[in-house]
Each structure stands twice: as C-alpha cells, then as structure tokens.
Amino acid sequence: MSNETSTTETSIYPKATPQTPPVLVKKIGKTTYRVWAHFSTTSTKTMEDEIKRLLREEVRQVTENE
Image (tube, rainbow, N blue to C red; front, side, top):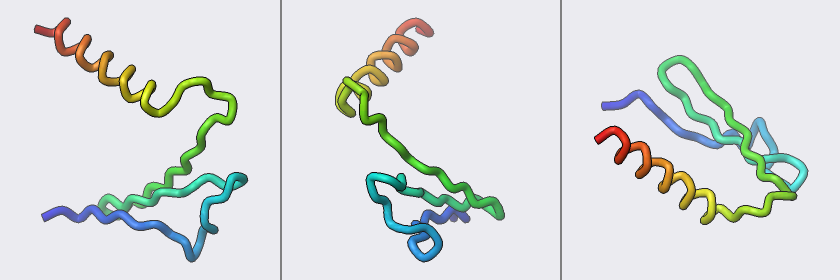
C-alpha cells in the first residue's frame, strides 16, 4: 500500500482564475508539496506540440542507449 495522497486545497487557496494559477497538492509521507501551474500567454506552441516534442526526445534517448 502507498502512503501517498493527492488533494486540492480549495479551503486555503482560492479557485484558479486567470490571475491566480491552480495549485496542486501532493503529500508524500510527512512532506506536503504545493505546485502552482501557470501557462505563458505569449507561447506559440500548443500542448500537443510540447507532448510530441517530449515523446520525440524520449525515443531519441532510448535509441541512442541501445
């Protein structure tokens, strides 16, 4: 079994708006990690473009190590 839990603290942090980024909370053991996500308003890449780039890089690394 795992001691990991994942929650969103909406009572402490307000809901995300364009001015306030969403917060993700992950508790591992006795340590709680809070991560704020934000996205560039001037970016020219889409999420799909970035995922494809990450996959290409992963495949390249795997083939280089073989």
